[in-house]
Every structure is written in structure tokens, then in C-alpha cells.
Length: 353
Image (cartoon, rainbow, N blue to C red; front, side, top):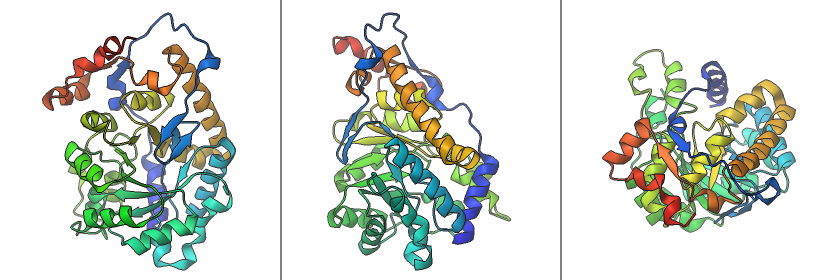
């Protein structure tokens, strides 16, 4: 387990690159007269799990070895310094081996008052979920869904039959809000229906376009590779389009392929209430350390406000009423799924903006 965690980080570094993705197929319409000032911008986001001053956070990545302990320390130091939330990677390793506890507990030790997500897989039982929460004195729990990764992982699970029932038990039994997230393969309407019925506090659609665990796990296979599954799943943008009929019924987060503050704002405009960043921040942490990551997060905060000013949006509610133009794959997907993309293109007129 410890070796696999370090392999994931090494293979992430070897395969990391920022490239075009479906966020590039979502466009705002420029307005030459924003009619406001920067001091009017407020990007506070209200969530079932609390009020955050910034609508993005460091999403779950790693832990389970000495190397990943140092990474978690860096991530949590940056979260503490910038006041944003941070999520643990899967804590399964520490639940199996108490010697690995500190590779996760470092998140709380260096960020005593911060908002921290614990993280477990959907295959784990209620008692394990409670132990993961206690391990970090966590404010909320992420339960991750990663069936494609498990299939490609040489030693991965092959039985997903208990996942939904386990999740329902966890939601009923733990004392903190539960957020269900994918790990980079996106979600569909059918999944949203099940998760909303299960009573989860929020859903992180976590689509493809960023860190690709099929690529990473394929690199760990000596034979019988799954290269043909490289593009499996839905992008974050397409997953948010799938979520449109459920925006009023559930709270949605977005992650996967988020490269810069403009991507954050596009996800928020598509209905996400908060945006998780994994690969982009992990790459900075590995290359530039804590100081570099703190500087990047502060730059993102500033640029987020500046782009909201450019859009004439004093708050996130106004952003969610901005017209959006879809192109490429998201446009085709929306039309085939009966989602009426033309309504997104003119929604400001219906809201009187």
C-alpha cells in the first residue's frame, strides 16, 4: 500500500500536463460596461457544510507514506495560510496500518482550525468511516467513487455491489456532512438521482480532463493494459450539464481539469457551489513547495475577484445568471440529452439582467 501511494505520486509527475479540455468549450459573453468596482466583489459561497470566503479548495490527493506525509504537510500549511479548505486522500492505508496514521493526521496538526475533509472509499463500513473522521477531527467526509480506477488497478477491487448501501449507512450514521465524489470520471443523471435519494450533503462530479487514474494505473500494469479506456467517462463540464435538472435538489461541487481561475468561474456559472483543485495544486506543491503553493492560491483569489469584476458580477448568485455559450462536445452532448443549451445562452434576459 505504501509503495503504491508513492508510485501514484511519481506517475502523476511523469504524466502531468495541462491541456485543452471541455472548459475551453464554455464561453462567457463579454460586456464592455461592467458598471461596478473591485471592492464590490464578494465570492463567499454558502454551503450545507458551512460558509466559505472562497469558492475553491484543495481536493483530496494523497497520504499513506513518508513521502506523501510531507506532501500533506505542505498542502495543509498552504490551506492554513490562505484560509481555504483541504481534503485528505483516501485514508484506507491508515485504517489498515496504524503506523501510517501520522501521514494523514499531519493535515490537522498543522491546520488546527481549518476546514478538513476526511476521505474513504464507498466500499468501507460505517465504523471505518467514523474512524477516518476521528483521525482528522474532520469537518466533513468525502466518500470517493472510483470503479474505473479499481478495474485498471492490478490489485483493485472487483466487487462494487455494496457501495450504495454502504454509502446510505454512512450518511445516516456519521455526525458530519457527507460529500460523494468521483475521482476523475464524471457523473450522470442516474448517479445524481441515487445520491440525492441517499441524502448526501453535496456531490462532487469530478470529471475527466485532469489527473487520469486510468493512465496512472496503466503505467503500473506489466501486461493486459487498458489503454483503450483512456477517455472513459464524462468531463467536468458535461457532468455539470447532466446536473442541470437537479441543481435545485442537491448541492454540487466540481473538480477535474481545473487549470486556472477562469475554469473555476465557469464551473460555478454551471451550477457548482464550490470547486476542488487537485492536480494543478499538487504539481505546484511538488515543484515549488509550500511558499509557491501559497502564492498561487493568493493569486487565484485575486484573479477570481478581477474576472468577476470583468463579468459585472458582485457575487456568485449573479455569476450563476450569466449567459453561457457552449461549443464542441459539450454542445453536442447537451443537445442529444435534451438539455436545451440555447437556454443557457439567454438566461440573463429571463432573469431581468
